[in-house]
Image (cartoon, rainbow, N blue to C red; front, side, top):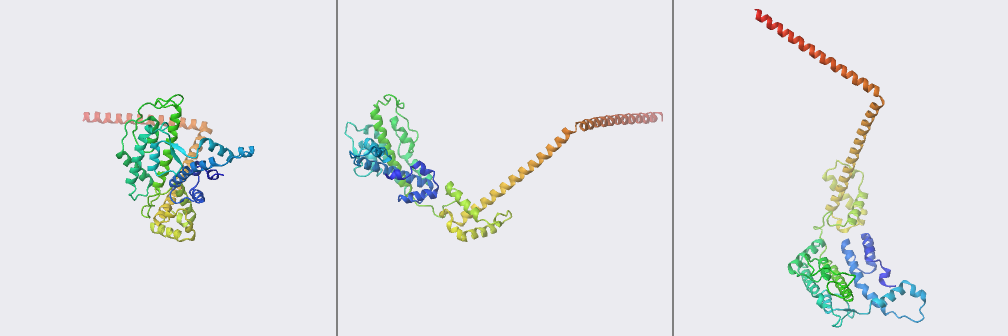
Length: 388
């Protein structure tokens, strides 16, 4: 059984938890330190780096005349047949591709050999070679930095690459590689090829297939180089570690769950001063269980304090939302009860409405009578003054 048959593929590996990833990498002798993205890149690089070597070994396995049909139908038998057909002992590449692999420090002795001049595709790969030269040069310019932030390092790499290189319109068949690896605003020289017929780049189908195979080899080498480059940076110091940006989703969830289990009833009480929380953090960190804390770089008191406060705040918000929901539900019940009472006693509603109308009519009559009396009194008073 080949090494890859025994190990999971990168897609399956990505779905593992951090702990299981590290166990898997330990089995195959890889460094298991770093964040999840680093572990995934390292595993993919190992997978790519070992794939062609395994296939070459399978291609060399002897096939005896007495081999049974059952053996041929097995996974190993099929892999051996495919390897013989698809993967010769040494892969033929163009001179430009060979230069790229040398710059990227990729490949073992005897793994690749140069194509004949009639098959060489270097004329189509010139821009790829220029790109790789500048990509490696940009890495060397960023490497002296001390940042341990992978995203920041990649951003700096792309920024340096943009400063160093600006290609004129290039062969459309290599545009994809250039843009995937950080070169922006790359324009194809002509429209993309029609894959059902001879491409508009005037390449026969066989030549286009060979070119794509070489581009794939270069990309594998670049991926392997990038993985090594990213792991060359120093790890985060205690001062650089911050919550939550320095941790993956899996790490954050594991840390929250651990602290949640360690919190006593008193630690959840809302009225708790900063001094009380500091004592709580000290209690958690001094416990025997704290030796099993899932993320080593998150053991600092400042990180534990932030997690504890976050959990307490989340609980407070949750309780507040629950109280609001209960209050709304209570109000809704009262309104529903009132509506129900009205709807079940229509006669009382009508009677009440009629009574209100009668009362308003009486009040209006009283007001009118009062105004008339006031008017008569004023008129009498004026007449009396006139007589005097």
